[in-house]
Length: 93
Image (cartoon, rainbow, N blue to C red; front, side, top):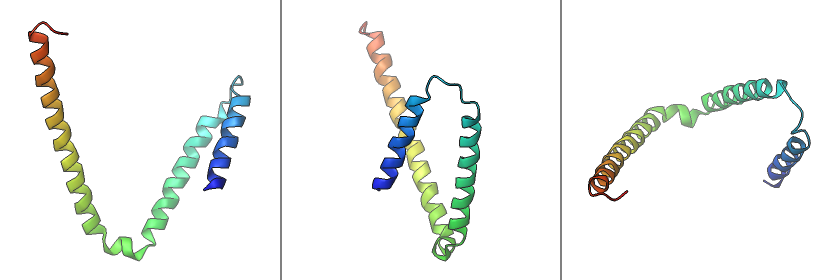
C-alpha cells in the first residue's frame, strides 16, 4: 500500500513540474492503459472458477442493487421536488 501511495505522489510531483508544458500524448496513453487494465481485469475474472460458477447469483444481486438504487433515487427526487415546489409557492426561496 505504501508503494501505491508513493507512486501516486511521485506522479503528482512530476505532473506539477510539467504543468506548463502541453503533453499531447498523455490523454491517449491514459486511454490505452485503461483499456488494457479493463481487458486484464476481464481475463482475471474469466479465469476464476468461483466467479464463473456464481455468475447468475452475482447478476441477480447486481440487478436487485441497481433496481433498489433506481427506486431510491426516484423517490428521493420526487420528495425533493415536492418540498422545493411547496417552499417556492409560499414565497420562501
